[in-house]
Image (tube, rainbow, N blue to C red; front, side, top):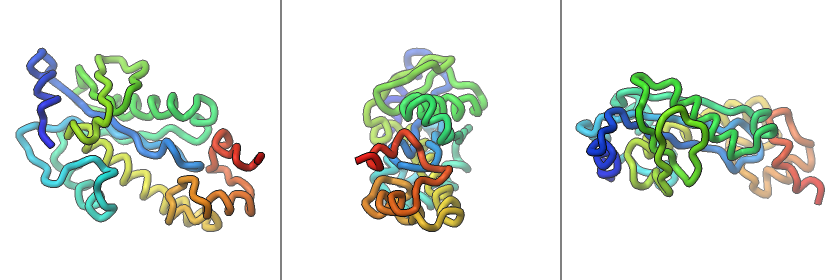
Length: 198
């Protein structure tokens, strides 16, 4: 993975480029987490890759490295209530905007993973599969994924009957059966539980 994409926009006059990505759009419960990262292209982070292509152990190892080597980073959430009110796509965008707002210096361009970039206060570029192309987005994807997974371990202690530690809230058969048996908890996304009506 190289900084070709970032360099392309630096050559167009942008000076501070951030990448942003989210984790947790698909789960039935818990908030969606987003991260935004500004990296120095001259500093290498060995093993940096799309979080989905990395093992949990590798993501955990990269997490402190990214925090240490990033020029700036932000990690933010959109709550279960916001997901139900706004829908998951808009809530994900909200979490990304919150993460970007935490960055210092403020970026003049944000590379947004995916095909949607809504209401950012600066220029954005949508990058399909950006976490496999851009180191900035890849770093953000790792911070978001690790942060959310750690939160799921805490939620599992609070709501042990759902098995969240294992599936991280995703709609596995075990999870859906647990919701059918115990009913939804306060951390379940009401708009994601349509399977209960079947």
